[in-house]
Image (cartoon, rainbow, N blue to C red):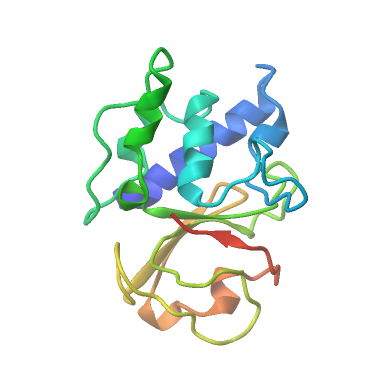
Length: 179
């Protein structure tokens, strides 16, 4: 499944950057919501904003836009050009297949914590119930969901297994940024 591989590649780029001594702060990698200072470079309104940040910081794959898309979503045209900062504007919410869980420490989080979740999950926070979440839209409507975990593993949950206890076995209540 290409979408899961793309998500794992996004995670791998983050983890390599975190463990490399390239001078990038681990704060640059964390999608967070510092509500006290929305003007901060690390405040993200959406997962799209977060991914653009990773691209501008040269943390994401070399041809980033295609890797954030999926079947049913058209990838953004071209790729980011650091000599033309406006090229980041090509990547929009309609090109982004992923939601991202906020306030995780990628290197320290429990490996089972969800990090990336396909955009068809409609929740604003992780939950810890035995209930089914609401799923709709691309890529899989209510038939499946792809999750990339903080440990780098990926999994596809199909309709009968899509329960909060399977999505979020750690019970965290972190906010989810949608495209």
